Length: 504
Image 1 (cartoon, one colour):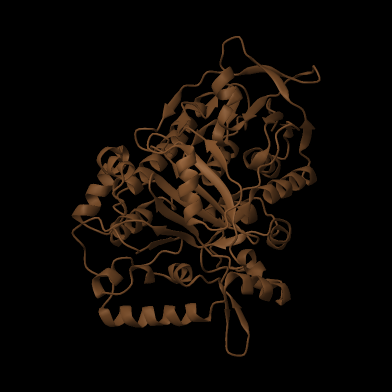
Image 2: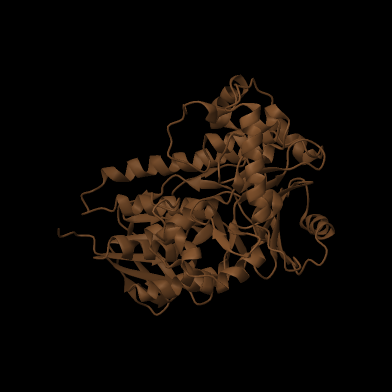
C-alpha cells in the first residue's frame, strides 16, 4: 500500500542510531533511511551491560548471525547482576535472568542464590558450556537466558557495517540548525555544515543527552527523576582482570553510590556512580582507586536522570538518551532503546493523517520509563550495607512512588511470583520476579507464603543444579572450547526449536 512516509532521517549514530536504522530497514524495507553522523564525535570505548532482550533483538528480530557477532564484537556472557548490597557485611545476592523458586532456599536454610542454574553460574563464575570427564561439551546457550556485555567501540563499528550492508545511507555531517515547523509540532528541515537543507518525512533524534531536536528545537519538557535517584556523576575507568572474565555485572555498594563492573575479554570496565551532593569528583576517584588496584586513567561523566514528556512529537521521535536516561544500575539504557524502537516500528505512520497513535505511544513509553524509575529507587530505599550520609538519606527520602503498592503486596504475601501476578505489564526483566529477588535479597521483611516444593524435593533439585554447575567451564575456557567446537554449539541459540531467544 502506498504511503506518504517514505524517508527517515536519523540524527546521531551510536547504538541508538544504528539499532534504529537496522530495525527500520529490516521491518519496513520500503523506507529510505539516512543516518547523519558527525565526524567530530568519537565512539567512546566503554563496556555496556545489556538484558536478554538485546540477545533476542539482535538474533531473532534483526536476524544477525550469532557467530559473526562473536567474531566482530567479542561479547561476554552475562547471566544477571551480582549485588554486593542489602544487609551489613559481606553477603551478596544474585539477580539472575534465569528464574526459579526464590523462597524455598530461604525456608530450608540453604543459599538464597541456589534458586536456578543461571544463578549458580553467577555464584560459581561459570559459563553455559559444560564438559564431562571425557572432555565432551554440552552447550546450554539455548536453555539458560543471558545477556551480553559489549565493548561499545566494537559494537558500534559492527552495527555501522551491518547498516551499510543493509542499505542505510550514511552522511558524515554536522547539523548546524534544526528548523521547526510553523506550528512547532515537528521539524520543517535541518541544515548540515555543507549548507544543505535536508528534509525527511520522519526525523529520529539520537543526539544523546543534548536532545538537540526533541529538547532544544521542539521544547519537550523534561521530567526529572532526582527525588528518586540522587546520583548525577560517574567515574569511569578500566581495571585489569588477570584473564578471568566474570559472567555477570557487579553492583557494589560505595560510600556515595555504587560501582559497576562489566567484564570484557581484555579487562573490566568499572564505573562509580555517585551523588555530587555527598562527594566531590576527586574524593570519588580516590575511593574507586582504593577499591580497584591497577585502575587506569579515569574520566568523569555528568548526567541528569529523567525523561522528556514526548517520545513522539509531530514528525519527530526521540530514541535513547535524547528521550530518557537513568543510571545503569540494571542495564536499562539499551533495554529501553529496544522497547522504543519496537514501538516505532509497530506504530509507524502510514500517512500524515495518523496522529492519534502518537499520544498512545507516548503514554506507553512514559509509563515504561516511570516503572524503571520506581524499580531503581527500591534498590536505594532498602540497601542497609553502609551507614554513610548518602545511604541514610536514600533510606529516608528516596521516592519509590509507583512501586509502593508492589512493595506493600510483598510485605503482606511474599514472594510475588508464587501466585498470579496482579501487575499486567509486559516487562519481563523488571517485573514480579525482579522485585522478589531485590526485596528478598535485601531481606525486606514480609509474610511468606508456603514453599513451592517439599524439603526433599528442594534438596534433590538443588543437588542436581550443583552437579551441573560443577561441570561448567569458566568463561575464558568456554570461549577456547567453542573455537574448536562444531558451529551448532553456539548456533543452538537461534537454531534450537526450544530456545529462549525468540521475539517477542
